[in-house]
Length: 305
Image (cartoon, rainbow, N blue to C red; front, side):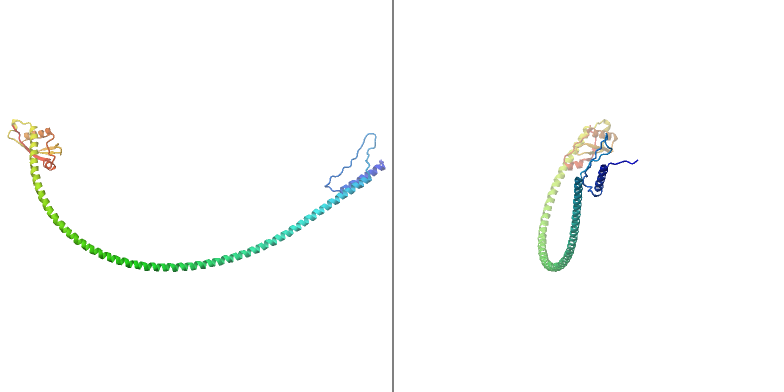
């Protein structure tokens, strides 16, 4: 069954459809679209009721949207032109910078080459200067060496002459000294001979006096030792007319270190040995000469009644 549509409603729907098409294909999607509100009432009215849109307002809105789109397109085209202009300027700047860098590189290469040539020239000049300086030093060293050799020869000649004179003077002084020493030695020898003779005479006299004194001391201490042994000797009648010869060894303080029998009657010898041991210490002289004669003494013991 066909549905009957109100002509005014159809007209309103067609106008809205045209607006939607224009909005879809020509609107700037960056701008915020205006919403067209449609209200519906369900109770006791027609199913769809469109809001009437004023044709003038619609045209004005369409023009406004067209103007905004044109403005946006112009702005985009201006932005693109600005980008292209900046890109061209950047390309020109890049080309200029590349040309400047090439000039700088060329100038640097030229400066490096000039600096290298200057360094090479300076090195050659320095080398030549060093060679000349070395030659000058060698010449100076050779001159100094010759001067030193000449001075050395002169010093050697002077030293040799001084040595010859010194040796001559030393020989003369040595000869004079030898003659003086010989004379002095002869005089000293004569004096010493006379002194030795005098000393020999004096020593002989002292020795004789000492010997006499020592002999006297030896005799005295021998008698003292015999008396000490006799005091400690125990005798009886069986010993009468008998004797014994004994050997006594003494320390420097008179201590008896050893006593032994040389010969004689056994009874007397045993009594003599006991007497010496009983005494223990015998008289000795503090005089070394006397002690040396008495430290190993042979003594004859005869009992006394």
